[in-house]
Length: 145
Image (cartoon, rainbow, N blue to C red; front, side, top):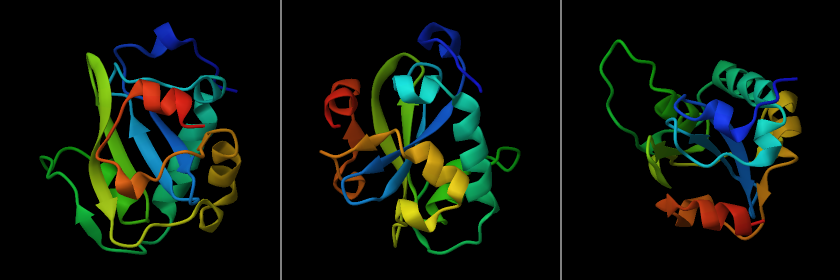
């Protein structure tokens, strides 16, 4: 179990997964200041394992867009988009998450490895559709369930 308190993750990069109303999945990168749901904080290790398992999957789609990063950095946003996930990045100082990478063909949660499906079971945003969003505020995430 990788439980953390919200103040423990401030200033550090953490990635977590969420599922939308259509069963599509997004990776959210906190950038040290982004909102993190309690369900993620209760088991941060489960999300890390789920993301690793997704990254081990084969590429399933092209990417609509993703940032270019210097070669010494792993572009996790592009890698998850190539596997059908949307990617949102927060700001170190908080603020909304912004869409930074998107797949041409989005994957559904039930097409992902079981460890990812298990992590996603507790973070579903039934009021949201990631394909329709360019930004997502903490308020929207808190009330989009």
